[in-house]
Image (cartoon, rainbow, N blue to C red; front, side):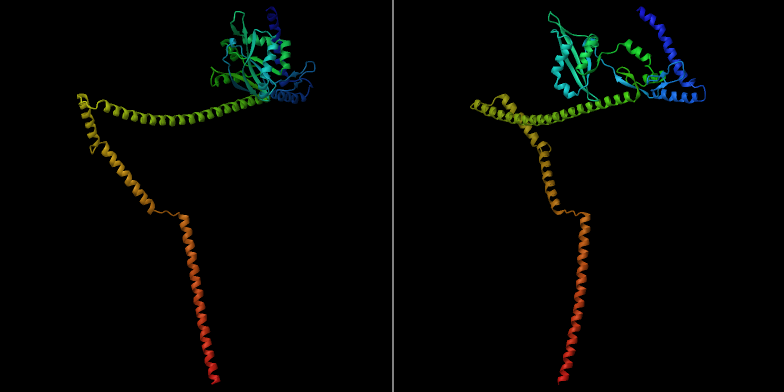
Length: 409
């Protein structure tokens, strides 16, 4: 506690000097002492906007190191992440492996045994895998928790903070790295005090105005929390994570769609079976009623008609008369049946007498008949010309015969 109290005053001047040096490098460098200092100031501003490089401003003071966290960097944005809702008692710890999901799943048992060895091989501890999820760049997220069994037979989960603190020890962290772990973190919900502190203090390099606007634009302040995105690398990483999550959602939707299709098929089959069983039940009811009737007839054979049976016969006769009345059900049913037969007959007759020809087909038929007619006309004209020629030939032959006969005579 004392060390913390004494270190606080020395930190403020360091931050103040850093801010003064940055402002000097961007506005008034005194490195060369001529007009080139103005060009150097613009160059330093460009580096600060980009978030990389060094800003030289004085021969006696080291240059300012520009990072993407500096307040002048332009390539910054604010996104939103879902806050976890797991308690510390749930004991969930996330381990990010530099392996593909298929490799992790195929070696899941060996992985659990290796993690158990990392925990000291204590027989009272059991490592369990809560879930495995694919991450971009061939990485895999594995969520685990550890169950501790006490000598009296009860068991409890090791708190997430305790397990994470054990994993963060230097020797343990080295063993996890040998297993392929690149990152470990707890999956616990934030307390109201932590959320309030996070929202009140803008992250390093983020403008307070942008941070306030991000809090206002939060679509669901109960579940989402603003997260800064600094630099294109972080933006690309977030884009890959979002793309991977979209693929997982699409895969889950495909599975749900297949399940819905299967359930619809099962429902159709079940409805058909229910209808079949209903028909079968009706048939069995009719058969049972017929058996009861025959049995009742045999049992009452030789006995006189009783009063209740006579009353029942009267009721049945009344119902039969109502059904056979012209304006009641049987008459209406007969009328509907006759109308259906007439419609079927007229429909069949109309369907036999009515023909439809497509307009394009009719046009082609007309064109073909027109061509046939023109061909016949042309043929008739040729025949007429040939007849005229034949007549001329006959006439010429007759004249030649007459002339020759006169000469020989």
